[in-house]
Picture 1 (cartoon, rainbow, N blue to C red):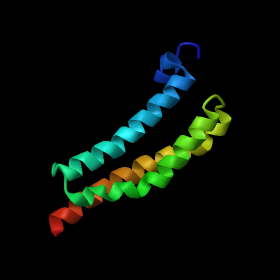
Picture 2 (cartoon, one colour):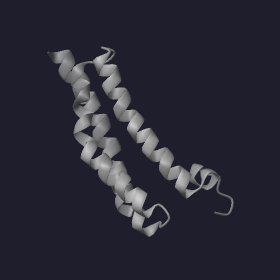
Picture 3 (tube, rainbow, N blue to C red):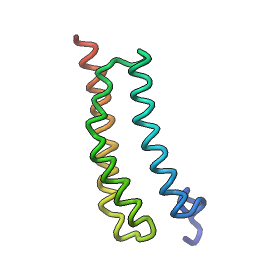
Picture 4 (tube, rainbow, N blue to C red):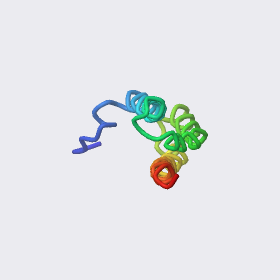
Length: 99
């Protein structure tokens, strides 16, 4: 990691894995809290459908955080997860507006 100052380099692999999982959990918890509190429409709970993908990404990461090559499925799942979470959240806002 010569010359790199990424968060993974700074925190280390294990702490970075823990941070990833904490941030992932926060995204879901805050979505539910905001929907229940009425801050966002209840339709914005659609991203909860991505929980299996989040579980897959975090499980692979937890098992293989020290091996870059074995993290590729977690990287792919994270990319899909971010895309789907955002898409479903936006869809929830659109649906709530139309209803």
